[in-house]
Image (cartoon, rainbow, N blue to C red; front, side, top):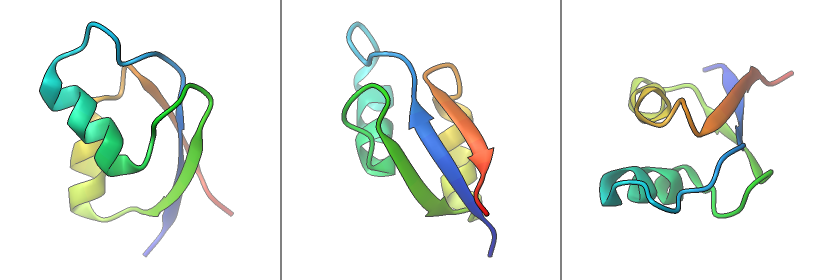
Length: 60
């Protein structure tokens, strides 16, 4: 599987509880935090739900 880098660029304050839990499930807790995850269909679905709060890049 390919890996992707996910970086939080916006706060989760004033967001729905579902979006907050999705960010936590991705491993993001603070602004500018970056995690490297496998690009599985489940992860890509979570990324699609919070794409306005994150930046996604391909990992090398």
